[in-house]
Image 1 (cartoon, rainbow, N blue to C red):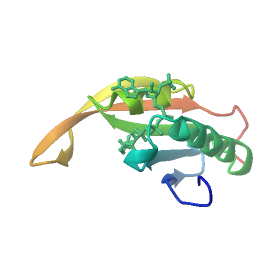
Image 2 (cartoon, rainbow, N blue to C red):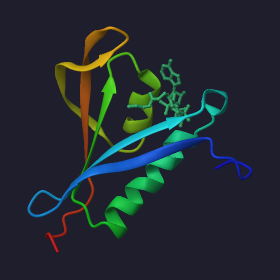
Image 3 (tube, protein in one colour):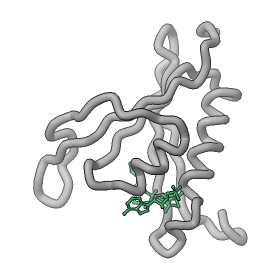
Image 4 (cartoon, helix red, strand yellow):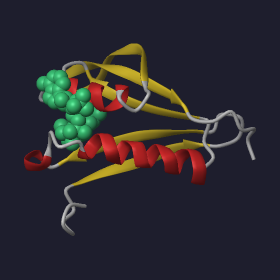
Length: 111
Ligand SMILES: CC(C)(COP(=O)(O)OP(=O)(O)OC[C@H]1O[C@@H](n2cnc3c(N)ncnc32)[C@H](O)[C@@H]1OP(=O)(O)O)[C@@H](O)C(=O)NCCC(=O)NCCS
């Protein structure tokens, strides 16, 4: 939200419980509001919810290879890249590789 207007979204999905305890993070910010730190702050808040409220051990995210601002959003929130999945997403008429990212959240035992 910025001045009571919805300018983007962060989604926590694909939550796996049991011995895995992980969630998948995705996000977007409307183009005219980009470059103002909104995604970085929103991802930071979502990670707090994933840790403190959901009790997850691990967050994961995927980015396109050339999406440097998204790489920056993840790196500034403590994510590290752990691999490249070939032909992982079909966009604009072709299959594209994606970077897979991870961040540890908590050492707590599964509840
Ligand atoms: C990726 C996206 C969410 C970033 O949102 P944002 O609000 O502009 O991000 P922020 O302002 O928090 O941070 C952007 C960072 O990327 C950097 N950046 C922007 N363009 C860049 C570029 N071309 N190369 C490298 N870094 C870049 C900014 O300097 C900033 O870094 P900093 O924190 O060190 O200053 C937004 O561009 C978007 O919605 N894109 C379309 C959907 C999308 O790609 N979602 C992510 C799917 S994985």
